[in-house]
Amino acid sequence: MAREIIARATDVTRRYRLGAEEVWALNGVSMDIYEGEYLSIMGPSGSGKSTFFNMIGALDVPTSGTIEFMGADLFSLPEDKQAWIRCNQIGYIFQTFNLIMVMSALENVTLPMILRDEPQEQADARGKEILEMVGLGHRVHHLPDQLSGGQRQRVAIARSLANSPRVILADEPTGNLDSKIGQEIIDLLKKLQVEQGVTIITATHDSKMLEISDRIAWIRDGKLERIENREDVEIKSGSMH
Image (cartoon, rainbow, N blue to C red; front, side, top):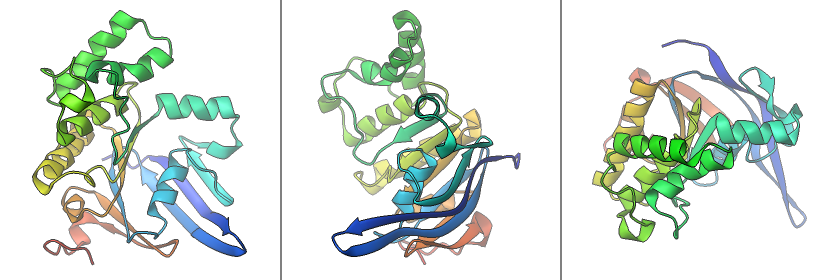
């Protein structure tokens, strides 16, 4: 695997105010993320992993510190450039799927392409190709409420691939799925990483992610506890250490 750095966090903090109380969701996190790797960010609820995930995806702004993406200081860029990166360089997958319920699977997948003024015919052709890739070539015209949870997540994965991103951010992608379907989604993400060369960053509680991650970053109480390579992680059945 190439060890080029695609994203770098340097001493990132995120502070919130809850009334008179000050809460540090992140407190001095530094990390390099390598192009083409599968990185899982793990930790208990409230640990700061989703906050860090949102920083990498330019969905939230650090209180201090820097996030570099493809060599540029992300939050020093103009908002239109940040928006361009969110649309063209990063694909997002959410635990709750975030599909538009009145749009078919194909329309959900092609929406990011249409938003960047891609011709409809071209967008439809690519959308069908991606849905085929994720095993939903026979469901292109189905609405989300005509699909199972696992199929909806596959549509969400297909949508994340619409604009050929360099990085896919998956926030608890198996959180609303049973273990069998969750394993299928994990296997699909791994396949995309291997075959498409895309960088996968996932925030997760799912211990099954350990088996297919290249590295695991453990975050607790807003701090990076450690980063481990998969081969160094002791996988305990049904639990995380």
